[in-house]
Image (cartoon, rainbow, N blue to C red):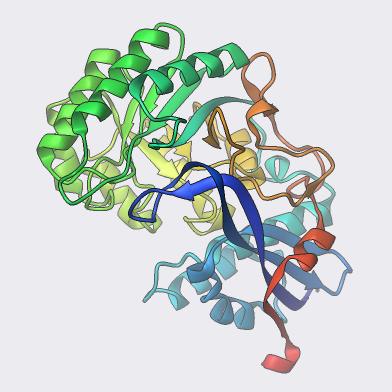
Length: 394
C-alpha cells in the first residue's frame, strides 16, 4: 500500500512592485513606487514511493486548518482522495473548510505523478487549450485604471493581445463615498469601445452597499450587453433572496457562489434561481475534488461553471469541463505585473503576455499539475512558518 510519510507546509513572501491597496486597505491597486508583500504557502506531501505531491497557494486561514488535515492524512493512502475529502469535510464542519483545497490539489499532483499522467487526463480530458479573459486590478486614483476611459483603453489593448473577454473590478470605497455613477460610466465606456468584439464582465467584488447601487450598475451592464455581472452586494455574495430579486430586474446574467462555501449551499443557490453562472475555485471549494463536484452539479442544472482565478489547478479543471467558457487571467493592469508568485520553473506563466494569438492558454501536459516549483526561491523567502507533520506527531 502507498502511504503518506509526512506533510510539509512552508509560508513564504514575495514582492509586488508598484502595487498598494486602496484607502481601506483591502483591495490591491496600482500605486507606483510602492511595494506590497504577499504571502503564500508551499505544500509537499511526501510518500514512501519517493514521489511527492506539491502545491503552492492558500492563505493563513487555510493553513490554520492544516493541523487537522495533516494529522489525519499521515499514514494514509494518498490515492484515496474521495475518502479523505469526505472525512476532512466532516472534520472541518465548524470552519470554512479552506484548508481542504491546497492539500487536495497536492494529492492530485501526487496521483498524476504516480500514474505518469497530467491531472486533466485522470479527470477525463475535454480540451487542452482554453480561451482566457483579462481580469483587472481594482480601479485606482494613481494614474493607472483611474477613469472610465482608462478602463476602455486597457480593454482595447487586451483585445489587441488576443483576449476574447475583459472583466472590470471597480473602485473601492464605503462610508457612502463610492461614486456609483463612475462605476456605471466605466461599464458603458468599455462597452462602447470593445463591446462588439469582446465578452465583457463586471465584478464589484461585493462593494455595493444598497440594492439601488447594484441595480444602477446592473442596468449599465444591460445597456452595454455584458456577458455577466458578478458579486455586487456587501452581503459577501451569499444571499439567495437578494440576488434572485436583482436578477428579476436585469437582463445581464449573474455569476455567484465564489464566496458560498460547500457543494450543498452552492446547489441550493442554483436551485433557488439566484445565479445564472456558477463560480468554483479548487482552492476555495475543497480542492480539485470539490471543484469538480461543483462543475458536475452545474452541468446537471444545464448551467456553466466559471473557475475563479488563474493557476495550474484551474487549468486542469477547465480542461476536463465542457460547460466552462473562460480562464480568468488575473489580476492584470497596463502599468504593473499581475500577482503571480515567482516560483515557477520551466515556462509556466499567468502573466498578461501568456495568451496566444487566439487568446488562449495551454493546459500543462506533464505529470500531475505539470509544473515545476522553484524550491530554492521558496526556501530563501520563507517567513519562518514551516511545519512538518509526520508519524511522530500521531
